[in-house]
Length: 184
Image (cartoon, rainbow, N blue to C red; front, side, top):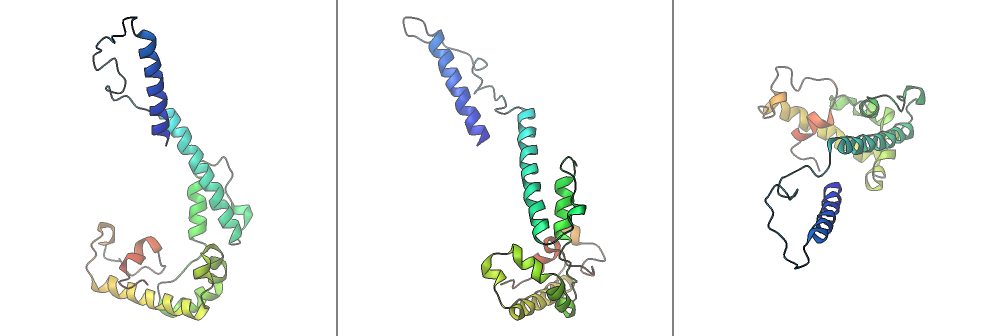
């Protein structure tokens, strides 16, 4: 969006310059490629504007994640200050650690008591309204498949090739979910 908007603005300015510089006979003089900024491959958005836009987006996302943290009942006293340069990362860490799940399928019942009532508030209605027994059975099966596949298959992801991979106590959606061969 920013690139397209900036490009249109630059084209309008170039058209105005060309019209202003056109001689009365109407013949536009031939220009070399360095006179036209579109042929010189100059950046459309400068670095400062890009960083300001990025900072604004991250601040907005941090506000949304803060709202989610409060919705799931995290203590507002631990929310990082708005001027904290690591605010977004800290909020994401807080949110992801708010629903600890052990990889042991026999411990799913604990998760359903401690975390599911809060987690379901963040999920779409189609998932949040599923019967708890159905969610618990799916989660138990999911953890069983993940653990089995991590032990059985040679890890193809470079970060997963350590000796201890698959033996972690806590489930990580980013690291473990890809090992479920039947997620639905």
